[in-house]
Image (cartoon, one colour):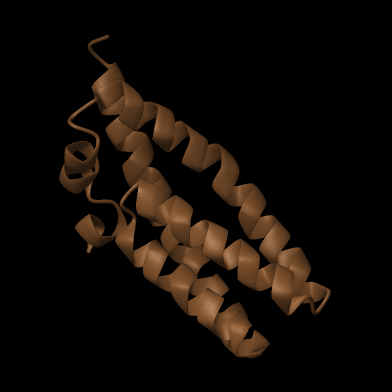
Length: 119
C-alpha cells in the first residue's frame, strides 16, 4: 500500500534519477498541498462546487507529479463528484484524501530526509 501512496522508484525514474529535483518537488508538494486542501474545504463549506472541482483537479495534478497514485485517484474522484454536483461524495473523498495524505507525507519526508543524511 505504501508504494501506492508514494512510489519512490517511479518518482525518481520519472525525473531521470535527479534526487535534488525530487526533493525540490516534494518540498513544493508538502508546502502547497495543505493550502489547496484548506481552500477545497472552504469551497465546499461555501457550496462553491465549481471552485471545489478546480481545486480537486489541481490536487490531482500535484499528486501525479510526485507519483502519489492513491491520492491522485481520490482527487480524481473528488473532481468527478464536483462535476456531477455530488458534494457529499466530494466530502467523503476529501476525508479519505486527508487520511491518506498524512501517511504519504510521512513517506515523502522520510525519502527526503534519508537522502539528505549524507549531504
